[in-house]
Length: 183
Image (cartoon, rainbow, N blue to C red):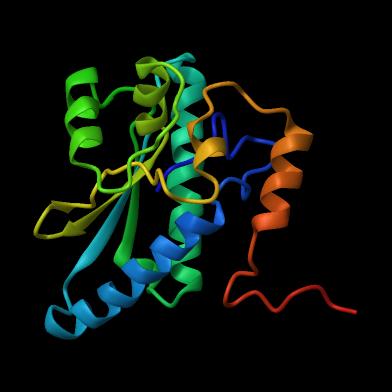
């Protein structure tokens, strides 16, 4: 799951999981629920990551928020909370340039325009990985280059709060278990 630069931030801890990434999580959750029928002991680890451009003092809580928002969304889709653990790497476990080059070369949905190669490396590192336990199988780390929000996810500039909140609010879908506002 990929995120815009700096999101979710402390002021908007639930903002940043764009619609295409929500849809990918829905597919994954459906598959995991079926897998639980085969292996009821299975569980997921959500691993939050951040690119290297800030101090780890800021990147650590950012990666925690990324892992938490993914976990929250998965539980809203019916995955039991006790089946999901979170880990926050901050910026300590970066995909290096060689790994990103290989992933991008293999990616069936490449991002056509991405600025510099360094921008692409940063975009690949603004993510939350999902690991199937106890098999220790890592989710695919391909950047969603064909997603409607690919430009927002790839932009290495920190977008203004108003821009991101308005953009993501327009794209945000209601959480499945969210009863909505009370009248």
